Length: 236
Figure 1 (cartoon, rainbow, N blue to C red):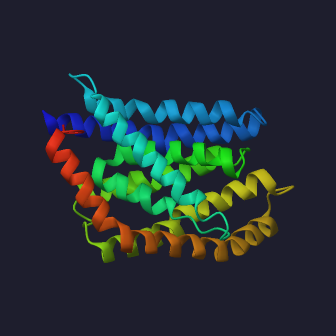
Figure 2 (tube, helix red, strand yellow; figure 1 turned 45 degrees about the horizontal axis):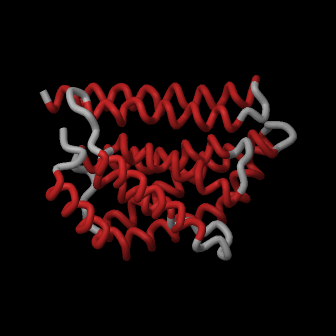
């Protein structure tokens, strides 16, 4: 039964994250200019659906929601603490750790909420839903890959994984945000310029993520695993 519930959650989460959320972001850009607060809240609502499916058949415990909130705070602080270094975002590393430790659904939720909250410091705008999606997908994929035994709780594996995820997926999503929200028109020239100029930014972001996972993944996993074992939180 537990595996059936997990598969159902995964199907719902995949549909919402890979189809509904990107479609919502696209429609917000196409038809609802400057409605980014509403779109951001919609993304959070979408994200909460598969997350709360974890509690099917029982009520969530307060401590389970508290650990999610604490990880969001850690992620936001990790981004804010390095505001003086352009594009250096350890936050993605914290989100990946969350996805591995607590599951894909929680990973995406923490990524999306952290992106939304941290932008009250860095600045809200039409880029916010894109950032929520980009950060969230990092946590979601980390949880999926760990669940499928592709990813291990090894700091070196995680460090390489985090760097690649930023370079291949998270960074290009953020570049696409720049393309649609900043470029006057979308054509071959603007596409090439945006993605090429985004490469140095993505390299710094990837380095910050890899460094965070290399030094913080083990101690954070120890703490989170101890909490999960002691209180039995977020168990199927």
